[in-house]
Image (cartoon, rainbow, N blue to C red):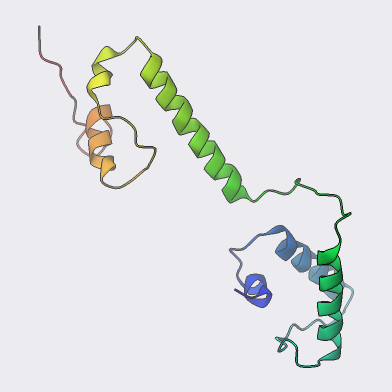
Amino acid sequence: MTTLDSLINTDIHTFLTEEIRQTVHKLETREWKIRFRWVKAHAGTCGNELADKLAKEASDKTDLPISYNRVPKSVIKRDLKNTSVATWQREWETTTKGRITKDFPESSGETTHENTPNTKLHNGYGPRQHKIIPPQV
């Protein structure tokens, strides 16, 4: 996906894309007229050649401070999900309460449609509210 595609797609909210959108908005409120156009790379276009040169110089610098203060939401969501599943699994394996649930299938850490009806059956949620009644001993 090109940068132009990212700017047009309203579902994309990366840091750089949002910075560009905000800058364009500020300039347009000051009556600037801004147009974006695709330019063929390495075709001798003056502004594009200068941009390529500056980008190359910036990528060669090794003395720049590294900043990790911007993390995509998708990374945070994935990490939270993985941590939650791991915590739940560890607690499920070590608890002494609810021994009947030890007969239930173990968590694979994956959420699939195949597991959904089984989960609904076990926890009593879903359209039919099935309940499992343990045998009388």
